Length: 320
Image (cartoon, rainbow, N blue to C red):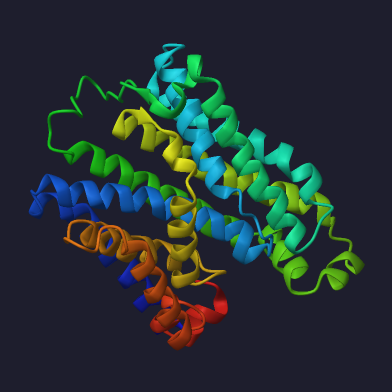
């Protein structure tokens, strides 16, 4: 046990050090951009797994929480003049509030009905964004969103050096928080309800309240990621609600491994680079999502528990 613990600690430390050194040795702006996008998607995928993998809620509206964070942050920063750092936090809070609203019917439903309600909620948010064009910019989106500043540091002229570290810090912090949540009594309770709902109810676990909490918590991290997405790209576009975006992030959850915070993070890095790499190849740009889907099927065929199972049976069983 101590040896395994030390090895795991060394691996995590090595990954952190490697992550900190990437922009030092990788000077290409586009590659840095891919890392930043991958970090953002990793936060969304890992937080989605909290409700989908750990709680067993078939929530197909998680990308809507990401989009709500995008627009809430963009509107607060541009129209209300709120500091972008605070606007990002507001984006997370607004996403959590939206999750609490959608949780009201979801906690009383099961199976396909949860999928239908959450997917309908996502489409409802999209139509609302498009219809309120005088505020949101409609199909054109909200452009020129103010960006972040830190002690006068200019994030726009450093070839994405600063943005990389902000995205990396957000990923590390969100991963630590999500891991902490899954290891608390609350995390154990939602897994108990997922595995055997009747047993959980018999033990006095309030199913409705726990589902509400897990949706609100997962939406907060997705909203924060959406807020940084808007500030980094300086645009809030309805494209974030597209089915292709949802499919890509969902594939990160499934390929990485459900009930695993680290798995979706690993898959987000892999699939983002594969997807964007294929987009630059002539003849493959339009079919890249189909190729990603094929890759997802192959991974799930040979590794049913996702990529995280490659690192050992112990990691897969413990929900690493």
